Length: 457
Image: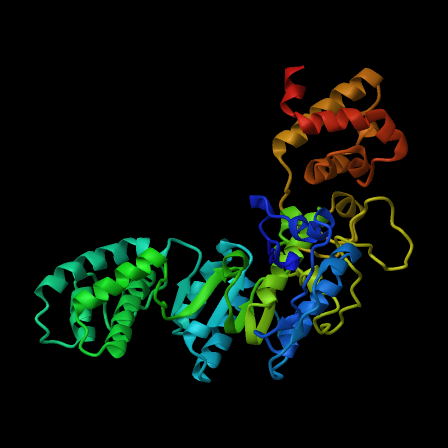
């Protein structure tokens, strides 16, 4: 038996994936030989070094489990780190940089822009369209199952029966595709029309490849090629820059890669920011993104602004110590998933230093107790919060004390947002001291386990 894998690329825990299968194998199967594959033939030393440094800053257990890659390629350019005023400016800046890379000779099929969530693609699509850059979205419906592809193949089957060989294969195929809406130039607007055109253009390019490989090939030969590719799920190359999520990019590689939205609230994603295990999976997700690049790598983030003009989003904690510091920026402490390591005086149990949503430094005591700045929307379940308030009201009434004596609203918000599963997790929340933990801990955990039971009592 041979088991192959990389524990540092385990990014599908929501589907049941875990690095434990790999890491525990030698202990469960004594006598197994472990071969560490450390040579990296894909990326330049600069890209590999950044990937290694990213994992170096993980908690000790994760660091011990990782493989330190050794680059085998010649030296290349250093990774580029860029901060933008907001997401729109970031999309425009990335599109302009991609345009320059294409003009320098890199094929569009060797360029990718990767992001954490699919919702980030819209401004990028618009910016690339305005820059005259064709693109394809990866991670959607499989190529041969797209409606426009299925329709085009049906038309090609019909054309194969009447093909008299009077036109070159590429010309004959384009005549057929034109009846499905194909045009020599792509649509100017982004969206479904461009995606449809890209699919048809891929079939036209496939016809050219078949003709070049087999001079004199006809439409019937192309149809046979398509049938074989459909059976093997070997889609033709869709020309254009690839837009994809980090998850969809796993297993792929490009000469030039842009990683966008590398900021708090996106990497790590906001709902994972308080769970050390989930934070480490987010770190592995960024590791996957970095190691997609062969030569050129750029990482960027947009600093969203509040109505008052204050930056409400900061670069990802994963970039602390890896990126150049900006003007006026202080040396960052370690955030999330590890000790702060600041050496300074503690501010109290569970008090947050940065907003769990956007990463902004928190100075207001109430914001620090909740772990969220006033401009970020709540991330808790309102039903859970109301159940906690109902329980607090009943408990305070029974004890004949004001409700805030039991727990303040800020503490209830922090409990609802973090959703602790045990008393240890509850004890880490600001406002839950030893006395209150002993007095109310089990009751609070019962409310969190079944909020609907509160309203029934």
